[in-house]
Length: 369
Image 1 (cartoon, rainbow, N blue to C red):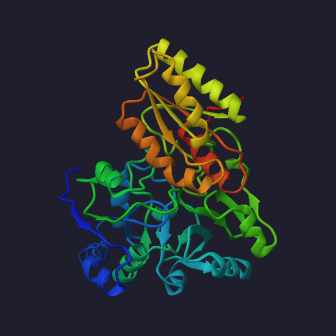
Image 2: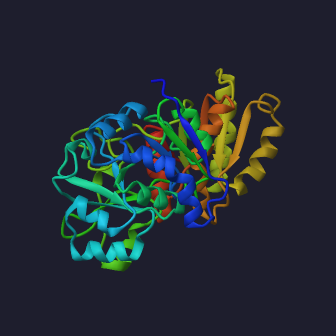
Image 3: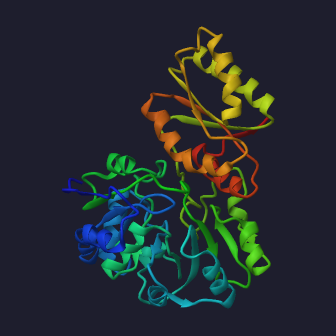
C-alpha cells in the first residue's frame, strides 16, 4: 500500500470541543467518505472507518494485515448510535453502561441487520464501546457514523499508545492519522459479553471482574482466556482471543515469583542468554527489582553493555505497568534486544489484563519460579 497519509496534530487535547471540532473536520469528512483515520482513545490508538460500510471495513483489514475472522469493536459517541447497532440490550447491560460508559469497556450485543458481517467476523453479535476521550468522542460525533476501530498497529505487533507508534506502523497505509498525546490506560478495553443471563469477560482490561460484579452482582470469565496458551480453535468471540497479539520482534519470556526469586532468575538468565549468543537482553520489571538488578549487572563485565532495563513502575501500582507495557515492548525492539525477560503478576484486578497481554506476547511462555 502507498497512500498519502494526512497527519493532523492535536497539541492540546484539553481544548474546547468547538476548537477540537474545527481541527478534526477534515478527518471526520474522511470517515464520512468511508476512508481510514487513526485516532487516540484513552486505551490505545484506534484505526477507524465507517462501521456500516463493507468497503470501509475492507480498508481496515488491508491496512493492518488483520485476519478477516477477527471481530472489530465499533465506537460510538452517543446511545442513539447504539440503537443502530444492537438489536437487544438487557436491563443488566444498561446498568453496566450507566456505570462505566464512556470508558474502557466494550459490550458484546446481538447485532442488527445494519451491521455488516465483516465487522463481526461472521458472528451475529457486535462489540460496541463509547470511549472516554475528547478527540475520539468529537471525531465520531462529527463523522455522524459509528466507527469500527481496532488498534492502530500492524496486526500482531504491540498496540500503539503514542502517535509515533501509529506513524511507524501505518503511515502510507491509511488516509489520515490524528496525532494526539500518549494514551492514559495503555491496555485495550475490557470486552464483556452481555448477550446471556450473566456478563462474561471475553478480554480483561482496566474495568475488572470485581468492579463489574459490584454493579450487577455477578461476572464470569470465559475459560478460553484463562489458560497459558492461545486457543486458536473456532470463531473468535472477541478481538484478542484467537491470534498471536501484542508481540515485539524479540522473544518474550515471562516469570512469576517472589522479588528475590525474580531478581536471581533474571540475573542468571541474562548471563546465560548472552553467553549463548544473544546480542542484547531486555528486562521489564518493577522499579523495586531494578534497584538491585542494576547493581548486580554492573558487577558482571559480560553484561554491562548488553542488558536494557525498563521500569514497569512500582509493584504497589499496577496501573502504571498497564500504561507502559506496550511502549516498553516496542522500545526493546528499537534498542536491538533479542530476548525480553518480563516480570509477570498475579491475575487479580488489572493484573489479569496485564497477564492476558503477556501470555499473547510470549506465546504462553510463562514460568512460575
